[in-house]
Image (cartoon, rainbow, N blue to C red; front, top):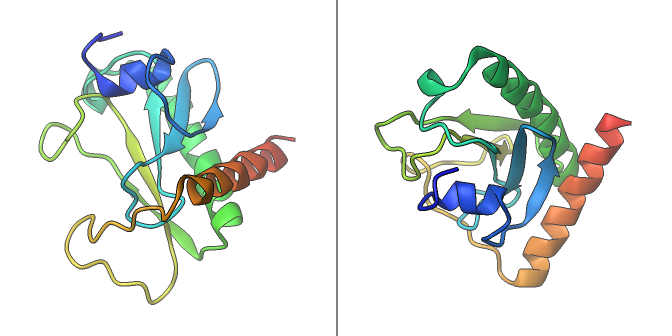
Length: 142
């Protein structure tokens, strides 16, 4: 763990977040500044700056969870697909390996890369989105 890393703080529960999935190796939470509602970040619990620095076995587990989370986000958000993004070094705003899972609907337009952002209107709306994804993950795992 890196004590100064925002995602390590979420992983070790010293910072709050809206967690939608976790297992022994990774966790996913709602992006606080989503491109579209349901936008999640999946991170390894251990601190690795980029995919290049992570062990192969962790990358394999992480991407199995990317697949699970992608299906759950599509189910929960009633969207047509997902956009997966991973920055490594360049444009990486938090220096901790993470994958963006962004719900997409046919016809939606992104004006530039990763904007405009669409913040949640309230904490209750964010809680409802979190619960929908948690329930979808649970359905897919059982």
